[in-house]
Length: 289
Image 1 (cartoon, helix red, strand yellow):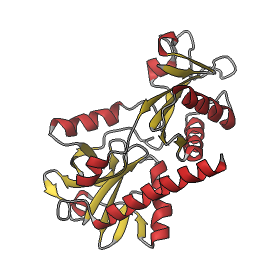
Image 2: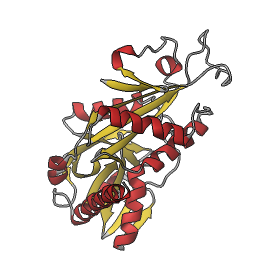
Image 3: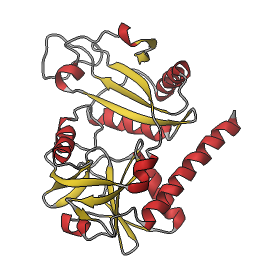
């Protein structure tokens, strides 16, 4: 498999990461995942913007410009040749010896970029029937707004939910629902859409940006404010959003049905609008060629 390694496209077997790379030893790095539809990187600009914000928050100096990174990712996409896929890319702070907790001098240590592309398709079957989730206490750190490669807290939460037989974890901190294990969470009550406001307790999702645009166009009232477990269980609808899952209905939490236990009217309306927005973006990209 071909991967991007700094400025080069090489076979995966050729990549050599130092055992003292700070990503390996400290989880000192950031990442993004962009969905590719029919050869088009959807919302690429927003993903790159968030990467730069994350880099700034962890005081990392990226060794390339947005244009340079974009060119490398597109070169990889052409080399791999997958029309429907997801591109994962991460940047670690690089290798500094000896191993110290202090950030190394950015003039002396070069960050390491890696990217790969894997097939991906719309999870239509699950979107049609919905998934089941369970409440899990949100014990992650307090910098959830950084898209860090340090995902152990998220993984533990998802595994706890899976151990109970659920598909997903709904995270709760001090009685307030924050998000899913790797997605933003939404609920519908009396035709009003709710989601946790952006801040240090949730990741500012890229799909969330698109949902804001869609609800405005559709005339749906959106309130970005907190809600409790009890309020969520009494909701009419619930769904999660991410670039890969798009809009995924959650029909049951802790064995209790949300609404009538099927994907709700607003959820389906937004999913259809999301798919239409993707198709329009793909067509516009084709027209530009």
